[in-house]
Length: 375
Image 1 (cartoon, rainbow, N blue to C red):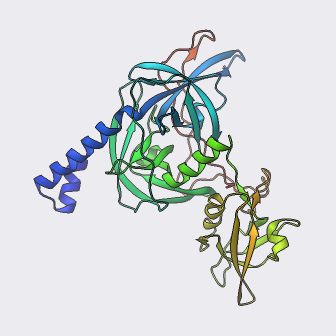
Image 2 (cartoon, helix red, strand yellow; image 1 turned 90 degrees about the horizontal axis):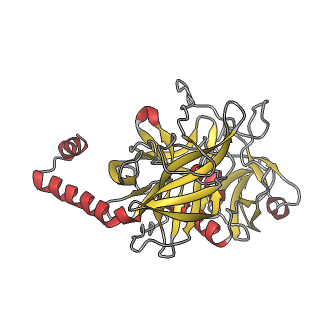
Image 3 (cartoon, rainbow, N blue to C red; image 1 turned 45 degrees about the horizontal axis):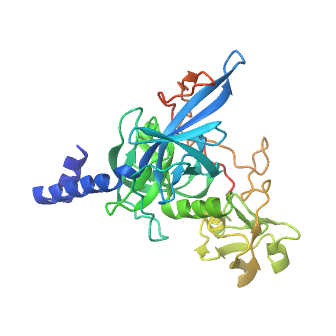
């Protein structure tokens, strides 16, 4: 049905349709051996208060010939044991680091398979265009790796009142049982994103764009943790009603912004290479600004545009990016869905395993908790 509708919409002939089909088959054949089933054993308390071992299963993929694998943090972080399945064989894996905010973990195999391929990372820092065809390769339940076809629907910067730490992709490919952490490729076989959360009501998923994947991968590989930047400002959650621009709500003493001369009430125009047009642009700019880097921050004050050069610092873990007026949780964007959308907790059918003998069985539901609002 997907190919039929696509052919009709584009007015393509049978030859064009077959060429597209052949390319999709090639993308699968070229990357099938880069995909692994990720398994994490977790100690959890059951309803009786007794500890049991729960197995959580997702999808991951090789990104280096040294055995580095990207996977979902919800399937690996806090696990007492991690291993991956490749071509039906289990291999022990170690967790090198994880970014729980964006649901990404970096693993490395203790012993490498005799033969495997590597997913090509994106070669451009730009987001894929809306409408870009996408191919996801994932393990669903206990079936073999299989492709799913869709396209990039839109860019996602928030969910309800929760602002994402960076721009996500919304992709018309579902994120079902066992598929979390799967790579999403374009028709050239290059990584454009990675599944990090499910949108089951519309059969879609949130994906972390390849440029964000690479930024987190580098930090985990070389630092063991993700370093988020900080210049010492908070952004007003509401746009200025008169100008429609983004204003700085607060400047913290002793921070790069304060020492540079930036003040509360200034209109924020640009951070580094990223223009600021809306509130969500600032977390995204901050995400791609690394601590220790010198950047230019442009603001407007009393009708005059000013530029300041400052050195970015590590962001304190307890400092938010966005100020909110939520009385129940000050300075933290509350998680609330868009109007008319009801959040439901999926049941957790994760199998309970004996502590001494964790073994691969059916997976639990996919999708991380809603991403944290601090970026």
